[in-house]
Structure formats: C-alpha cells, structure tokens
Image 1 (cartoon, rainbow, N blue to C red):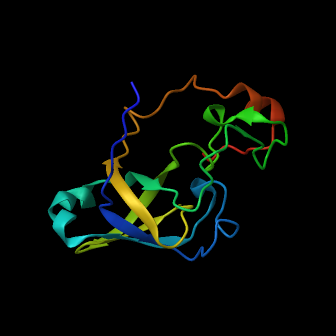
Image 2 (image 1 turned 180 degrees about the horizontal axis):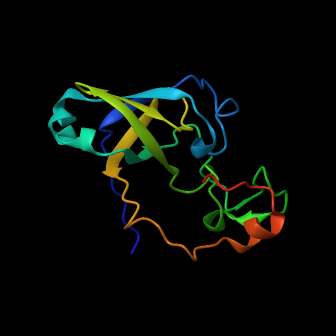
Length: 153
C-alpha cells in the first residue's frame, strides 16, 4: 500500500536556532525558551492546555535530508539504520520533543526544552502524561553501549 497524504501545519515554531547546525541534538538537554505560535483557526484547540505541565510537540523537519536510511548519530559514529535513531534525516522527517509549558498567551505558547529551528512547521500538540508515556524498562542497546548520553532526570 503506497499512499501519499498531506498534513496541514497548525502553527510555527519560533526559536533562537536559525540553522540545523545551531540547534541542539536533543531538546531536553537545553534550557532556552521558545515560542510556539498556533494559527488562529486552531486556537480553540488550546482550551485547557494551561493545565498541562509538559507537552509533546510534533513538527516537520523542513530542512532535513529525506533520502537517508543509514546515519551516524553525533554521540556514536557507527552507522545505524535511521529507524533505530532520532536523526532528523529520514524519509518522513517528523520531529518530536517533550517540552515544559511555561505559559500561554492567546495563541502563543512559551516552552522550554525545544530543539527545532526557527520557522519549523508545527504538526500537532499532545499532552505528556508521566503515567502513560513512561516505560521504565525501555532501552536503545547501541546507545547504552556508547555510554555518551546522560540521563535527563
């Protein structure tokens, strides 16, 4: 089944990172505040979002290369299949980040811990739930063997 479909952005990300090289390789490792602008026609969808301490942002990595299937992550120079990594370079460059919601003012969300570059199209927002989204025994074997990534918590 080879079917194509389209996505409509619900907003745009404003960040201090102007190029992919400037962006951190994982948002959870930075403290910068970014703004997420929700387009007016989707603002009603933000109802009650203030009650969420953290959000999952899904966005389109519009500057990524889409023809990569083997990549070398920055913390492990061995080649890995793209689907075993979080590389932005992939056939469908969808990025995601769990961010801390600092505040909402109308259609603008101020968040902390985002790695997207300025102008990145936002695809969706979901609430992060520590009870639903936490898997204590989850692992990435090659990443653990590399031993270069520090735990966030």
